[in-house]
Amino acid sequence: MKNTTNSQANGELELNFKDKNQTFTSFLFCGDSKNNRLDITETKITELNAGDYTLIIRSKEGCTKNLTIRIK
Image 1: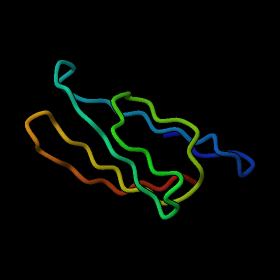
Image 2: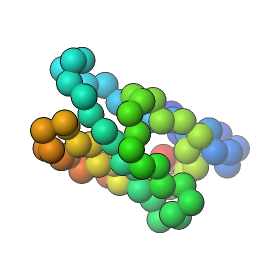
Image 3: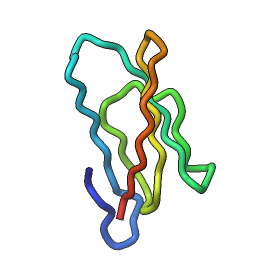
C-alpha cells in the first residue's frame, strides 16, 4: 500500500495472491461513489484518494473475502 502525498489522488494498493494461477475479481468501495472501482482484474490499483475503502475479493468459485483498508 502506498499512501497519498500532498492530498493528491496518488495512493496505491497492490494485491498479491498465494495461488498465482487462480483468477480473482476485486471490487473497491469507498464513501464517495465516484471513486468506487468495480470488476478489477489487475493486481495494482492506482490513483486512490485518501480515505477508508472496503475491498471485496472474489474467486472464480465464488468465495469472497472482505477487507477494510485505509489510505492516508
